Figure (tube, rainbow over the protein chains, first blue to last red):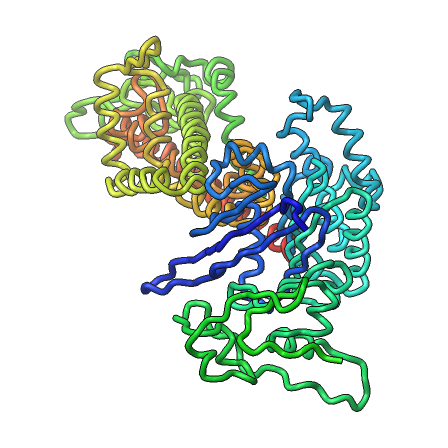
Length: 325
Length: 308
């Protein structure tokens, strides 16, 4: 496809300086394209840099180097003032639905905030009547009663609060929504509802998602493509079925094997031992070689680049696994 | 809430000072009355009485009569101490409350700017606070007062005369700004990390609006908690300045100036100094208890909210 990517990251890095001269590389030279209309699932274990990456995408965190292109335009160093004009088109949904809502403001006030600070498409301020109409529209969209507008965030359950967060993100009809683990803090039964809501909204509003999660089942349900992240970089990227059913990277294999299965007498595939190495430790070679079951001498020396294995499937491994049956 | 009641009572009594002076004590608390007399048990008694020494040298003001007129006795100028105590309470409480409000206002602006904007703004403001806090509070206040009281302040069209009550209000507010700004800045630093602030940035809300609409409402508990504590400190500072003739200027009274009046009479008529001293102790105690109570009450509700 030669479609202009909605969002493109080029060799993005985000490092944090820690005390005693240590450097934490949260995002470590990562390139990625998000095409209009797709849902890109971003998976990886805790601490691999998923959330930092999500925040960098929307310039809620400033990258240390690299480029961010939104709608083909470089926004890496755009000052906040200019960036504000783009904010209506790119929105974020956070993991902690309660922390993301100011506890001292009513839902109606919270939802109206983006409509108040951004002018309408005709360049004028939105009158109160327009905002009120939009608020009830939004509540309808996410399946909450209009009465909820009068209440405070702590009066709602986690799932309802996440609906409110989604409504707020959609208030300005964005093109791109980055959802940072939007369901991982919710009960399993509620998770499904919220994931379905995301899917419905994408269909209705033609949204593009970057869906960050550590739960493969959730990612499988909603994503058209999946990027697997390990220690700040993408190790495998491709269409959901290809990546999750025929993983080429040993790390993806381990991830899929770690999903609990309700099959009696089916022994688990060997799951990784140990923790991910510290993102502050200096590295040589493949970032995964220390834990990789099939690491060889070359893996400790040379870092594998993300290369295309077959159409729609790329992997960063010297010895990718053959597609299974 | 006894503390709140005590405070309300003190404030009410002070507000009713003119009523007491005119209708109960029948006296002018600002006019010297050294030659005056009052009726006591049907006898006319001099307000200034000969001293109780063998030669009856010198005069002392009348002591507490425990009656409507000169309830707590007279000061060295023959003025009714009880009436002056009430008038003094007006000034002391007004200055303390005004200074507390102004102090929290300044500290709020400084704390929010330093905590939220960070970087150079934070460094500059924090170091300025450090420098101010490094100077002993009373020394700082006294130095400022000496300058401002001796030559009235002119800021363009605004002129503060040497006897203006705004001078102590301003000075006391200023010297306690670091005391209040630090906890506010700390709270703002924590709030800045809150996800709802990131969310607001993500929505494209301008920085000033985030400070006003997202940060400020969440500072309410901190401000409410600090209010009584700063007012208690301000009351003490006001008394100290007035005692040194650097706060409220004669013929105006404040609890500090009355203590000063009583200083010379401390061996013969201790009530002149004890009464305003007691008033200060009671109010400061009540304010501190109120502050502690507010802190406990608000903390509990806060943690309960977070847990739910």
